[in-house]
Amino acid sequence: MNEETHVPNTARNTPHTHPDAPLTGRIALVAGATRGAGRALAVELGRSGATVYVTGRTTRARVSEVGRSTETIEETAELVTAAGGTGIAVPTDHLDEERVRALVDRIDREQGRLDILVNDLWGGDHLLIRSVFGKKSWETPLADGLRILELGVRSHMITAALALPLLIRSDAPLHVEVTDGTAASNRRYRENLYYDLAKNAPIRIAYGLGEELAEYGGTAVAVSPGFLRSEQMLTHFGVTEENWRDAIAQEPTFAIAESPLFLARGVAALAADPDRAARWNGKSTSSGELGRVYDVRDADGSRPDAWAFIEDTVYGGKEAPAEDYR
Image (cartoon, rainbow, N blue to C red; front, top):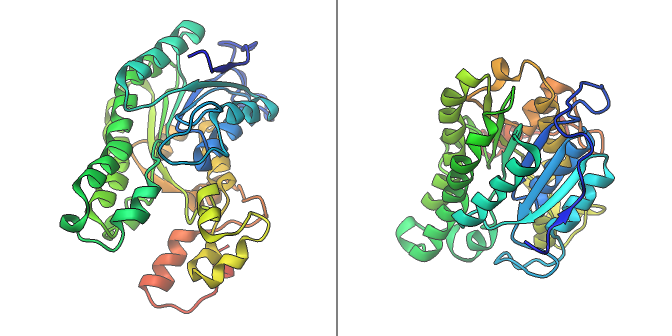
């Protein structure tokens, strides 16, 4: 653990409700915060005042199987601190039970509790492109299919099982499962059996944990971005955040794309909501719905509803511009 970045927490166990920093004193863990939605979630929780432990496999000294060295968990922690929170980077492979135990033990030792657990573990996009999409389950290389289930399901279960005993010490435990799609959108088959299982499992995890956390006053919820303009997706299309619309020529549905900030703002608002258990416990939701409920917008001021756009235009045959859904 000698590569970790630790900024001391000066607001330990002293939550308050200042409107500009409603999560001050709250302790969060964002598992899988190297890039994309995970990084944005960590930064926005920090902007709301939280102390945020951020984990991932890519550090300044080591690159994960994703193969991107341009984003690291140390950088994420620094962004959390720069936003006004306290960022703490702990390199962790969440498929390694001992590393996860060590992470949880450290949070216990340093903070005594955990208030917010965000399970944003994935890192399997390279497998989708290489061997999954466009193939039947029996045509998918078994090793790749099982790896998808490890990355998208087993890692989530290991993290939840080991962190929940610490989470329920909070006076208002919040467990967030990040996935791709909601219970409504995922009633449609997600192109490949392994991917379908990996992205539906977090929805069921949130449902089940909602039952288990209810007696502790807790909330478990699954959240999904729409068509996410993550660093990997921008690279895939050969564009940047500044000229992302150039990719619409390659993929027309990219017109409804959103930045990672949109989901992050919605989840930060949910985390600060005193009525969140009654509103969200055991449910799944999307960035678009969170935007409507909490009146938050993307960086460009829009409020994209990607799942409604895809349902209406891709599956429903409706002719409508993406701007009608922003």
